[in-house]
Length: 371
Image (cartoon, rainbow, N blue to C red; front, side):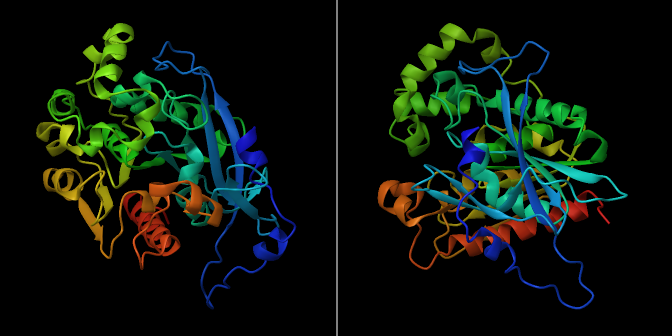
């Protein structure tokens, strides 16, 4: 598939793989990282949200032996990559271990892709986790967007539950996953998605009414939506095709197998009901940029943290915004992709990724009791 085809690049990769920071005396050396793709075909009837391909495409990062040769992962055309996505060894064997590995499922933001979670997936794998990121049907950059992919955002939780099903049933990964240590992490509306797995429920009228009355608000016309029309057009199309899903918008999509949730710059958080947030007992941690205009902390991360007992929140200062949590842009991308690469002066995206990924790994170690 084209994502991994673009990941294997440049002869200097072997040199880069060997230039890893050496552990201090007594420290456990970090694992090398393997990466593969999976395609899952759920047997149950489900809502594909208008997607052309009725399948769940997944990128999996996992601990690999130190002999695995890592190469740069990239996104975009092979000859002119747009995003740098860490180092990994395509199709490497899994690191031998007497203990099964914890599994973390990952959810990308609106219009993104599984590979946009590579900065986090590779870091989690290096820390000893298996990380599986899905392309959400109808709302990912690998195929045309659909109105339903944007409008039926509560359906995303079903994708992650079925990725867990697929990973546990996989002949290679299944036997090596610790079924009692499964977590979820997501960015933007992916942050909302993983909170659903913990039991958060949605009142869609809070967003629908806002966008009908105030369509100029940025969350009602995020850049990714320009190809599918205005919010009114999106809703009109969705009402024609997806009545059953609309009727189920307030349902619970809790997955009892998920025992910890890490939400990064969660969007549409204000649509989550206080009652459902207050009922969550799983550990929850949140990271957000203090300068986020897409998912302002006061009505998203702050609101979520204040309603979940024991939830912790890290607000990153210094101009860290929403798209800082996308993969790192190449020089070519910075001239072509505008807002997705336009970090504020002084913001080092790689350092932000390193900090947040480190916090996520430590959170999951603690919350899932990984030894």
